[in-house]
Image 1 (cartoon, rainbow, N blue to C red):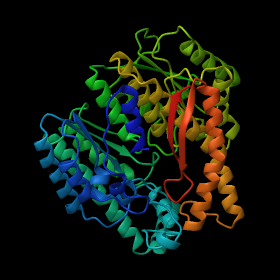
Image 2 (image 1 turned 180 degrees about the vertical axis):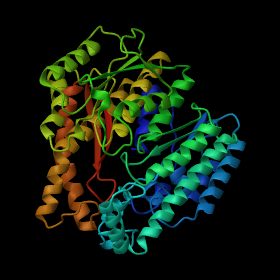
Image 3 (image 1 turned 180 degrees about the horizontal axis):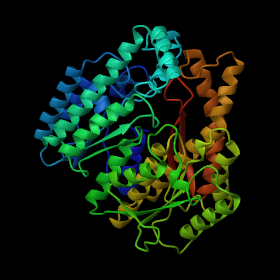
Length: 492
């Protein structure tokens, strides 16, 4: 997601997005190579690049998963940031935007098998650490204190290692903020990886926010929920900046109180998260009655009544009808927050297909967290807007992006993933967070066999004017949580 989708956004707007060789970025439990990436930046990155969008997790530790584990000392990560600042001095005409994360509460959870056996907290300790980290800091009640003491006894040396890793990441994030305040970088966005409104992360957030509020204006630093979508957000922001555009985005919920919904994996209500993302993307929030809004973001939330759902879909249809204004609507479906209601999660896409809407909107996303979903839909909508205004818009690239989202967020997560997991469980493999080679190969084959016809059916239903020119489907990591599609289309 962090590698593939920013490139696809650039293609929609006619902007080249260059990325380092994939081999340098690692894979799941194998970290990337920060030193090789630094060499690539120095020696091989495009000389005419107007902006650099850089992951501090990757350049400091070797990636998001690596940033959650002990290993790299703080001083090494800080030295790498200093080296990055020195590189920036060699490209004074380019903008430099950083994104990183506040460590999530749960370490990366994998079973203690195969190549994962030696990974930090593999097996039961990851569940104990997650319980500990989600307690109030410090524990308030006698029950909470007793549970904390029990978990600490079970965890042994893993607990201080986990706490030291949290402290290291916080200190490195503070150092990145400091370098930005000193002028080494133009802006930084730090996302809070999966964590709700209670837990150990609140102390980290307080320290980072206190520094940012004192030393950095809001247009140069942001600390908000999210992780995987941050590369897309900053890519979208650079696209609209170079197009001299500040998009006005109006948010329309599927029910009147939709903005108050709380994502359990985020520390703020969804309306706060959405507002932060709009700002981070270089946009501004438009009022409900603002006739000058450039983009209407339709946000569907769980628990929408049948009447409200009908009115919501009618409004999307009206905004996307032939002859209606452009840009067309962006749609973020958050009904995955109601984890047990698969019929509800499938309904909007199926209704939009049946009514001929799905191929006429500018953006769609629906998976994992509010920040992930909205942080995919909003950048896609503004990249489309910028492309049209600069006459660089690529409709084929746009259709490829949209089909990728429908195939992934709808077909894979609502149908295929569950079937693949069920098949693995029947084979006696109940933990799907890390698969041994034979199981990984089998799951990848099952996923490809099931998702391929689904994707082609979506193509014929949503984009009948395009034909498949090669569709690659993989499980990029040795688990079933995500799939990756390489969509290539051409007009019939």
